[in-house]
Length: 313
Image 1 (cartoon, rainbow, N blue to C red):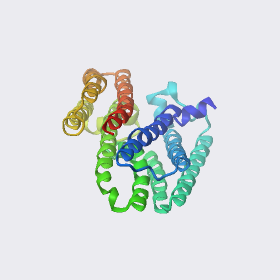
Image 2 (image 1 turned 45 degrees about the horizontal axis):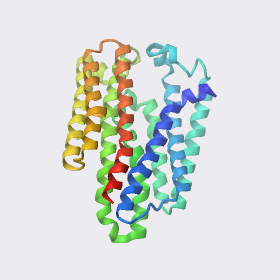
Image 3 (image 1 turned 90 degrees about the horizontal axis):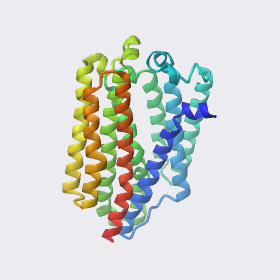
Image 4 (image 1 turned 30 degrees about the vertical axis):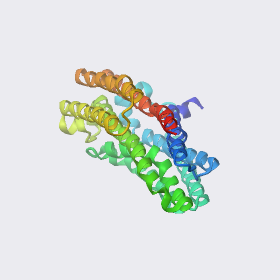
């Protein structure tokens, strides 16, 4: 069981589930409450939506390790799972179970909500994760962009299911709310996209030797390590600048200012220095881990958002 949890990245799955829970109960519900509206997707369906998302992600992790087992023997033999702790055919079986289950649950949620067309999201994502593992991750930049986009989709998926239901219930009166909701959700999604893109580049730098040996066309392999390092740093700098613009134009309160400075901007500045000085896989791994922690801190800002919106009422 422990090996299975490692294969499907259990901690990452908890983060995915936590992201959707926070976005619904700390951003969506308070914003709707400010306009005397309520979320239309029932809690039971929302739970199933989270399960479908988590299962789809678990399937992606399993199939990724299945196809990466040879490269992982070079890049990180100490943490190799498929081929050492789990038979490859078992990893494939886990992928099929989670992929099919996630798609079926997503289809059920969509059907119950009267939004059957949205089930296509789960089938498309499952297909992208398969082709990412087999092909796209070996293509220049394409794999990095796909992973970053799928990460950004996690919080936005909650709004994707809610907007049609809100329009169905409240009609044109929901129009002023949509702009506010889109601003918040796109803000979190953009932050997730940029930092995850930067982290993917850093992880490619960490795995440079194995990727080059097996013909992967990653940024460090194609453009060189120096350019990859600068690309990662530029993406982080853009994230810091956007945080400043978000505070100035949308949420100019002191709590947000100090949260952004102390928990996001300063740590991101430290990561920039870490990437600039990194010259070994171990140091790039430290920078990647630090970025993951900062992304978590960015998600926890949703708790602050809840208090900000509550204070507006």
